[in-house]
Amino acid sequence: MGNSDFSWELADHPKLPKGKTVAVVVLDGWGEANPDKYTMDSLKQGAPDKWRLVRAHGTAVGLPTEDDMGNSEVGHNALGAGRIFAQGAKLVDLALASGKIYEGEGFNYIKECFDQGTLHLIGLLSDGGVHSRLDQLQGLASMVPKEYVYMSSLMAVMFWMAPVLDLWKHWKMILLSCVRKVLMHRLHLVVVECMSLWIDTRMTGMLSSGGGMHSGKAVGPIGDGDAVVTFNFRADRMIMVAKALEYKDLDKFDRVRFPKIRYAGMLQYDGELKLPSQFLVSPPEIERTSGEYLVHNGIHTFACSETVKFGHVTFFWNGNRSGYFNPTMEEYVEIPSDTGITFNVQPKMKAVEIVEKARDAILNHKFNQVRVNLPNGDMVGHNGDIDATIVGCKAADEAVKIILDAIEQPVYDKAENIQILTSHTLQPVSIAVAGTALAPGVRFLKGVPNDGLAIMNLHGFEAPSKYETTLIAVIDD
Image 1 (cartoon, rainbow, N blue to C red):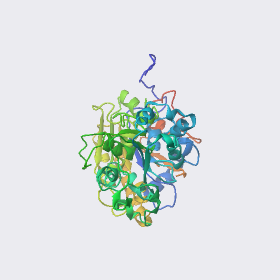
Image 2 (cartoon, rainbow, N blue to C red):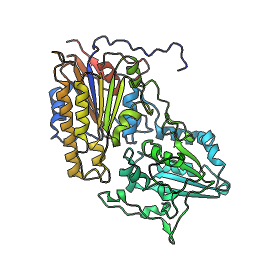
Image 3 (cartoon, rainbow, N blue to C red):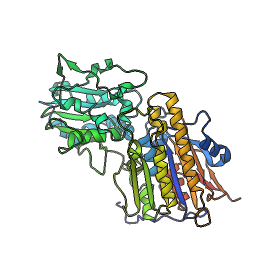
Image 4 (cartoon, rainbow, N blue to C red):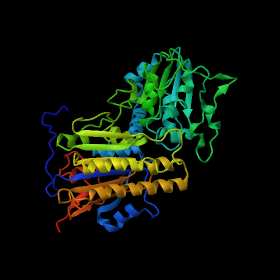
């Protein structure tokens, strides 16, 4: 850590006791809107001083401006880190503005191909600013004088791919619709003209393969001696693309060939895997996360979600780090998501399976923290199907009730459990805390406090001094 005085030991909270099981339930994509959500509404109405709206966009989660929509990645980073870090989009903005993006090892690495090879730019083009931004792509494309580049090509995965890009690791759905298009012999390269790709209002283009052929031939496939840059700043989808471009022994699908290229990501998308090995902008350095602190202070942790959000309660929560801090004190469980269909077809998703695992983890008394993500609001909502989204949100609401019932079961003749819920747009999101073991004086502060600190407090610890202001106050009755 570079500080000889540093210690992982957390001070005891002066008013909140240790020894409670804390369930952390993230309702992904859940906003504050119409009622008819029995469990979540009952939490709000039953204990309004333990419920409030918080910001989950813009500068509150490390994004450049208040016009930047929040997303699952930055939200889980902020929840797990207990502090606000400059996030991908802001880091890229700073690097472009300062010119540092052109000075680093990553740029110098791909520059070797510019005089004879093709520069391929791969990523999502949309105006949402969640995975990438058009102005950043323009800045990236302008970094090389035209007379210095033999040829450049743009593979633009348009907004019709956005629902697919929000999945966690559906290799066939993602890569066969994306990377493979430029690696095979007769493949589609989606160039600037991809604006003409069709899309219907139900996003049924999610599994289709789009155009991009010219006179029956693929346009600009990646070949030996070329440079490739993936320009998304968000990590989750790009991790898979990076593996396909960098891992020679990848066996998830047949790439037909593996050209000798120089590849760099806009960022390093996985610090633990060091993937990609070359990148243009250094990712946020998120260390000393709440999860790592709690493990060092004896907190046994269980984390679970289905495939599409499993990485959010593990990788993103832990500061963009794969794996365990201490495998003897942590257990992560992934429930396989449905494949081959859009989520509005099965809007309940795996909510029941997730909360059954969480309930068992609560009741077996092995874990001090049980952390889950219920992705229905996010993943079903992406399809634009309002009826299916209502079904999905009700399923998530019912799942919360299962966890709440488990939390409120007496343990050894006394209640020892607490539940904290936070739901992730420019709209505020709700957070609530409940449980019979909750200290009677617990209140939520106003302003812009941090949810992650509240979790540490509920475990009976004071947060580290460099963390943000906690959400929780304890008022003497």
